[in-house]
Length: 271
Ligand SMILES: C[S@@+](CC[C@H](N)C(=O)[O-])C[C@H]1O[C@@H](n2cnc3c(N)ncnc32)[C@H](O)[C@@H]1O
Image (cartoon, rainbow, N blue to C red; front, side, top):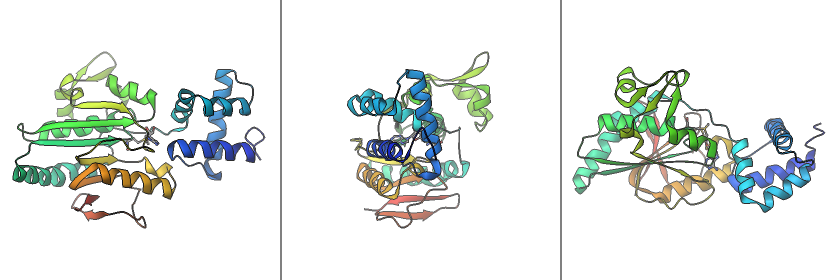
């Protein structure tokens, strides 16, 4: 029994977080919510959960800060390399073929739930290296964590964060400073970072690839289905969806088709 976050307060807070973001707390991770709330109250000198609840339900900015503090932001460069192999050896060739047939040269990719930027930068480096120079790239990267977005936009990573980046990319796409690495403008300028809560329609359309990895794992099935439906509506026919390797659309009412490539499994929007 948690005396700080009793059953009534737990239900109130988990419901309001779920309504705002799709992030789902259960009894199994209740302790995480309890400790985050405890930290917030201490840091902001608010004396009761009741007062804090009033604040987040009246002030959108306070709600954003709460959501930021309950997210899990673990990420790394070229995380799950099999998926990047799929991007390079399957998705890019398919898109190049399709675009050439249609007389188009633009490829639009979205990293949804980009955390501190390692995922969109990995995509951008690979695309810059592997796509023909005649193709233009537009990469959108979004998250609801403002703290993470600030790091992502800065594009500066400590030496401990760069494992996973091929040496040739480290040399070509980063500038080394005393104790870290700064991504070059050539790569940074390919990406538009933005605040976006996946609970809402982003307004993005015409996407060729969506990465949303290790994000919906924190949602319940209703919220997952709603996010996947929004992706579907924002994507071109024959476009590709990457989700985390421990996530699945199995059992979900979705029009995406499961695709097993030589490197990893992905989903495709079939028209
Ligand atoms: C574990 S990280 C995954 C980062 C990256 N996609 C990867 O796989 O390495 C999950 C990210 O999803 C974000 N997130 C969680 N719920 C979200 C929501 N409703 N809208 C937007 N981003 C969300 C979190 O802020 C966090 O940065």
